[in-house]
Every structure is written in C-alpha cells, then in structure tokens.
Image (cartoon, rainbow, N blue to C red; front, side, top):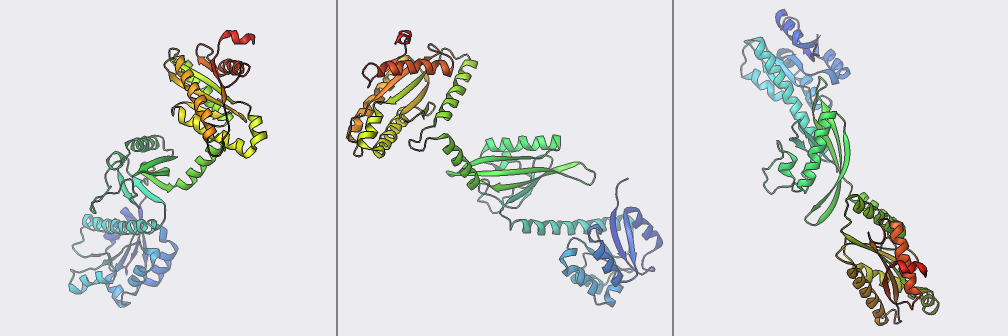
Length: 429
C-alpha cells in the first residue's frame, strides 16, 4: 500500500464535518490539535514528516495570526504550507489573510475532489519554493551540481560553467541533453554513455574529463549517482562537477617527471623501453610486417674525456644540447629517450626504407659536430650510431636491441663518429 502523505490539521471539532475529516484521513495521515500551542510543539517534534498545516481562519485571528507568523518566519518550516479554513464564503477580510503568510484559503463549496487538489497544489508550490531556495544555497558552493531526468535531459544546474555558457540571457539548459548544450561532442557522448549505464544498472560512477575551451585546458571530475522516487524507482541522475585542474596538472607533471630525464627532457630508460616494447607488440599483433621500423642507439664519443677536460657542468650542457638535436630531428610519433649517462635510444615508426634511418643518423652526426660553435661548449663533439630494422633484424625489443648494440660497437671499434646498419657479419666482431 502506498504510504500516505502526513498532514497536520488544527481546527476546533465543529469547524469541519466528520465526513470531511474522514476523507482527509483516506488521503493523508491526519493529526488534530485543539490549540495553536500544542500544534507548534507537535510541529517542532515532527517537522520532517509534516506536509501541510490546516488552520481555522477564525482561530488564527484570535491570536492575531501569531502562529502563522511564527511558522512563516522560521526557516525550519520553509517547506510546510499553512492553509486557512473557513466555513463560509470569503469576504475581502478573509481573502486578506493571505497577506499574513497563508498559502491557500479553503472555503465552501467543499467538494472533496477540489479541496484535495488545492491542498496538494499548495504542498507542491511550497516544495517548489524550497527547491529554489536550495538551488540558491548550492550556488554558493564552488562545485557545480545538476540533476537530469531519466531521458538524460537537464532539469537544473547550479552553475552554467564556461563550456556551455550562452550569450542569450534567456537561454536555459532545462530540457536539453548533453549533445544539445556541449560544444565538445566527444565529452557529450562520454556523459550520455555514463548516464545510460547508471539508469540501467543503478550504479553510480566517477570520472574525469579534459576540456579545452578557448585554448584553456581544464580537468573536471564528475561524480554521478542515481536518484529514486518514493516507490524506489530511478527517476534521474544527480551529479557533482569539481574543477580538479590544479590537482590533475600536478599529477601529470609528477607522472611526466617519473618518466622523463630531467636534464634532456627526453624519456628516461624505463619509459623508453616500455613504449618501444608496446609499439612492437602492436605492430606484431596487427601484422604490419610490411611497415619498416628502426631502433637507433646513439652514444656520445669519449664523453668521459669531455667531463674530465671541460668539467661536468660542460658535460651536462653537451647532453642537453644533444637531447635538443634528437627532439628536433624526429617525428612526434617516434620514441626518443636518454637510456644512460651518454647513451640515447630512438625508435623510428613507419619509415619507408632503411636508407631513411641512415639519413637521419647522418643528420644527427652533422648537427652534433656543429656544437663546436655552441657558445657554451666550443669543443668538438661526435656520436656513434648503431641501427637495427624491424622486422628484418628482429621482431622483439630484445632482438632489435641486440642488433643495434652490435652495430653501435662496430662503429666504436672502427673509428667512431659514424653510423652503421646492423649486418650479420658484425656478430663476428
């Protein structure tokens, strides 16, 4: 059986007929009080369960509407309407009672259907007022709070944040979906998919999205939960949006530092090898054996001598300068890292032919030689480069590493300052 709404009725016994009280009791849980003092004490104790107060208009006049004033001014009772009852047709004085804080005036003819509807309307009107007051309070919070219905349409939002803000002052998101209001359609689809899952499973979700509006990068955390009606059915989604940009950028910076060589800005050894292994695995799975790739190992020639003669500070400048050369030589989809003190590694993706890798190695060597003109170096610097091709010289990182390493030490053993592609003959060295 559906739970009845609770209703407090304050009337002298003769004000309402027995038949009317019975009909009230069928629709509501009714409490009757003999006077305003008892009613107020009862109201204090049961505030959360009371939906409305019915008060005899003549009784209210006797106390100069003090009970109504007290209820109207106390925020504790904001959601409870006080409805005036009169046994006679209203005159102007009766109608003026609304100025004292009554939400409704019920007078003859006392047709039950009409009275019940007017009582419920008064309750809903007060609920609406309370809702607006709550929204205004929530707007004082930095978080954005919104509610959607079961069709994914917005019912309200406390803040129109910058990603959906419209120039039209009369524009509203009420009744609109994420696809209607969001400029980033990718994030709109993410939101709608998350909502669909919540409405289907009844399970809430938390996730972070990235927004780039007008060139400003922001990260927003969304915390979504289902809401339920009195029968336990899902009737919408309530959500909280927090701006977590500062925290997320800090996390990304810490993550970057954990994967980046601080001196050159290239990836560190573990991150470099991890990415190359992942790429090789994907190439192998996708049967891209017709796509050539290359693993390039680069060593600075006689770097210990540079440190010993020029000092470690100059040595760091040399490392940083070669890091810049590598970053400026390769494509964004290539992987480049510093894998040791004076050792670098580059993985070249989708090169058309082995000669392209040789040309890039030559370019690195020539740019390195020009460091003699660097105002903070002014010394001759060269590199040795060993190259292995995927899949010709190996399909795994370990196989390619072995081949490129053999080619590198072939160069080092034959005069340095050069570059070579791996050949099986190098195994005999």
